[in-house]
Image 1 (tube, rainbow, N blue to C red):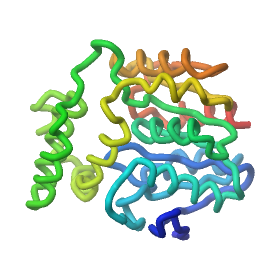
Image 2 (image 1 turned 180 degrees about the horizontal axis):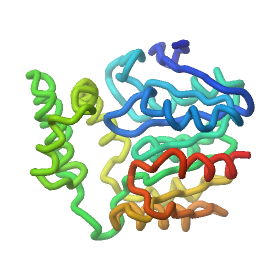
Image 3 (image 1 turned 120 degrees about the vertical axis):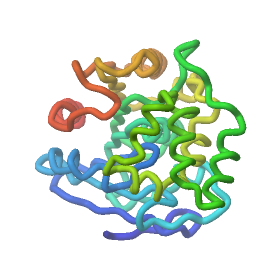
Image 4 (image 1 turned 90 degrees about the vertical axis):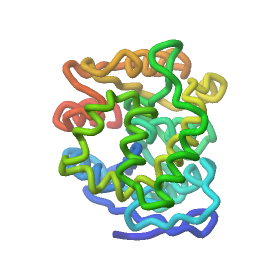
Amino acid sequence: MEQTKSADGTPIAFERSGEGPALILVSGALSDGASGIPLAAQLAPMFTVYRYDRRGRGSSGDTPPYAADREIEDLGAVIAEAGGSARVFGHSSGAALSLEAAARKLPITRLAAYEPPYIFETDRSVPPPDLSARLRDLVSTGQRGEAVTLFMVEGVGMPPEMAAGMAGSPVWPGMEALAHTIPYDLTIMENHAVPTDRLATIGIPTLAIDGGASPDWARHSVREVASIIPGARHVTLGGQTHNADVQVLAPVLEAFFS
């Protein structure tokens, strides 16, 4: 992996592949740059794709104290490495981070956001205000698995039995390794309300995407985002969930970013 430095000196690791205009992938909660490998492989024939480890993940550093502003600066550092401007695709909380970066006028030329986890009206319960503190306490005492389960139940709204069933899955060790970053994503999401005033200032071509098989909160969130950002487009990927098949997602992104 290559490395750049954010504004506060934190090393940010990234990998680039392909050839063409720069396109940066921004991952969501409990994932790092490696999560973008399948999508990058689909897009590399058309774009120079940058996958990076967000702060505190993978090979990137984690300078305290955490602030969402630092993550926006991290994305800015990767954009600088990509030549000074770039297309950006963000997934889940990474989509929310990307939208905040666009509102701050980072040199993003086109933005695609897949299901930023805003909570619209009464679709689901807002995570309790002490969730981040409880997650940090669990991680500090080595209870990373318990932290992931707590987030899945109280942060995501997953039924407890489903969250417990994930503990033996192949992806579980990777999620445990990233448990300390869950409060970072909760900070980015604030109270999970749609940041209407900030989104309304975004002036670049924006595509808001949801999956046709995703829960109601995702579809409502994406439609609201598309209605607020001037000129934004909305597309639903039929049959897809929060983690869309890259062979379905990639052609939509290719068409939008070309």
